[in-house]
Amino acid sequence: MLDYEYEELAALVVSWGFKEAGAREIFTGLHRRVFQNKEQFDTTRVSPKLLDKLFEDGPPISPFRAVNAFPSADGSTKYVYTLPNGQKVESVWMPFGKYVTLCVSSQVGCALGCTFCATGAMGFKRHLSPAEMLGQVIHMRRENPFPNKKPGRYNVVFMGMGEPLHNFKGVMHVFRALTHPFGMVLSDQNVAISTSGLVPKIQELGQLEHRPRLMVSIAAPDNQARSAVMPVNRAYPLEMLLETLENFPLKKKERIMLSYVLIAGVNDQPQDAARLAAMSARFPSLVNLIPMNAHKDSPGMNEPGEDHLCAFSQLLKNHGAFTTIRRSRGRDVAGACGQLAAQV
Ligand code: SAH
Ligand code: SF4
Image (cartoon, rainbow, N blue to C red; front, side, top):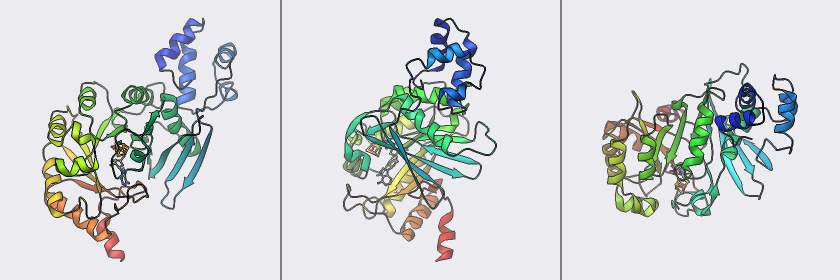
């Protein structure tokens, strides 16, 4: 049922001879009130006949066979979803005071094969359906209710498994559902997608009146080094990517986030910081440093030491780049370097 855009649901409900208002309430029930069964709809004004019709084949609202939660000490929780055929994807719930960031997956595996990435090592299995992407958001909201539920307190980022711009159609469907006035009512800026740099799709995104914010993974500041760790760079080299970003139409005060996985001994030298800062200066942007999260599929790629991470971040700042650091669990702790150093 989560696979229907609002307009499709409305057309279906009207084609069955019911009023469109019923579709509105069903959409709100699913997307805003995170209902999970027919009984919860019984408390609404939706006509019982419409509910019978809607649930006549007993369609399950949840697209997952199972979900497992893994809470972490920093307050975030990772969820692992088992799909009907046994494949697994992940999402992360990351609270920051009044706001929460929901990091969701867009594909099972990924076709782009970045050498530092565990998802890349899996290869591409398939795109997630809109229901499977929205299902992650809805599951996390159901599991973590806010005391005074209000719309607009969430950020959804497509930064889990997969390349969202490869699943462009599905991801844009999810974006429209998340920002729909009868749904969660997120604003466009509350949704972000992270891409490895699929130039034609970035251009397509830029032409839309309503679109999510853009984050681009850089990982290396010159073509030779970037092609070695991100094969996508051979199709869309840095110069082409940066030119596309320069021409990407930004809203007032909007900035493009440049993600940079910092890998010890690979892309962490002072000249790398200088080049990265020079890229960042070409258009309104923010550099987000992500220390390498070491795993067995990327041997020899390790997290830089805390001192080195801070020094690299400081160099970027000295070169004039806006810089934040994202810790492995996902928590942005811009400016924490000094504090951490003070604790040692
Ligand atoms: N495919 C998209 C979004 C998913 S990857 C993209 O590449 O942008 C999300 C982010 O995690 C990317 O910025 C990527 O560079 C980063 N990443 C991948 N593997 C990592 C690892 N082992 N350690 C730290 N960050 C990693
Ligand atoms: Fe991993 Fe993103 Fe590269 Fe895909 S594009 S392999 S998800 S870093």
